[in-house]
Image (cartoon, rainbow, N blue to C red; front, side, top):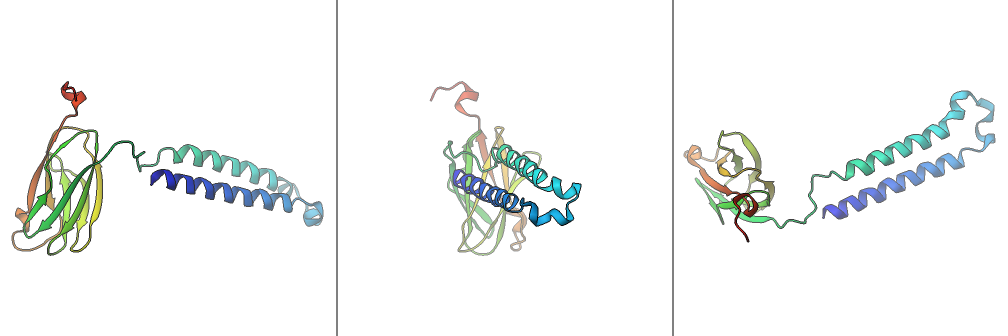
Length: 178
């Protein structure tokens, strides 16, 4: 998916660049602007080409760092269902360094699915809605216990709607061979 988005973006940038080159070439006939030729109007075509080249270089270098990932690592999938007043997770033990895809829905009302670290700092969040699945991708960098809390008031026991995730180190961290 990310590769396709990158290719489409590059193709559109090249198309826009081609249009700019066509405009510059078609407007460079002296008869088009000779009566009002000034130093500024003579500099427009080369400046446009220079600007187009700079924009192209910036796009090439910045598009390499898209935050979508390269898809090389298989994601750990966790199905999450929120219901008054609990979270049901298909698994609650994960590993660091591998993306986790949380597929979040609700069995009853809207809930806010929030992942917190041990200091109760919010790391990621997504809405849990009935009859709809939201996808949240997150990669845990450090092992530990992470807390799942509801971020949207959902009823009288909303404050008790929490569970924990245990994130362990990777095989390389623990020295265990796979």
